[in-house]
Image (cartoon, rainbow, N blue to C red; front, top):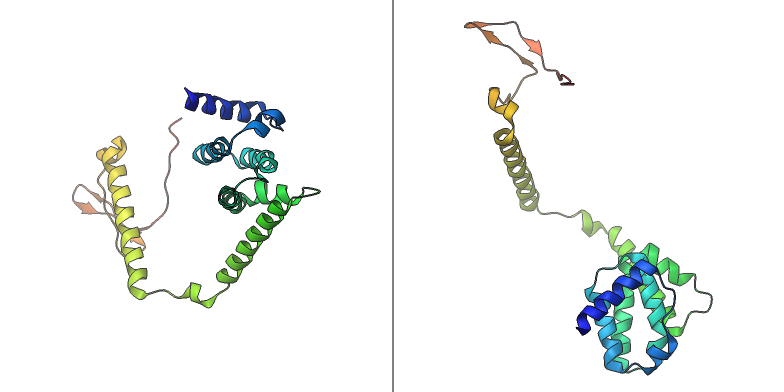
Length: 194
């Protein structure tokens, strides 16, 4: 029953778009309840905007808690700042008087993005094993064959027509009554049914 209440609470939070929690309720909350609230928020799917709002609303109540839970909360905030840089990180940067915790989170997320940028400019990124490149190409061809085969098997129109793969050349001929016609260049032909 408690789980259903929490799920209902999260649903209301998302639908009503509340902007603050009831101070009296959260001040009375025990550490285990705050921890469950944090874990439940991780387990539920939120949009970037909703998780940003939820975490900022919860953050003031986590200032005077154990270092372990505070670190867990901080890690979750950093994760969300990285996952939703537009909705979380940018919104948190706009806070007029951010707490020390929020400042740390913003700094950690910005360091992550700086490191990511440095990695993307590294010459090691362009390094690839020839065998790996070949295996990607083989997998791409195999996938393409499976898609073609599946489309051919499921299509009524394809079952009425004979399929021929042209492996080289830029022209084709049609055989009518045992007589081969003149070569014609390849071109796309389409017909609207309506």
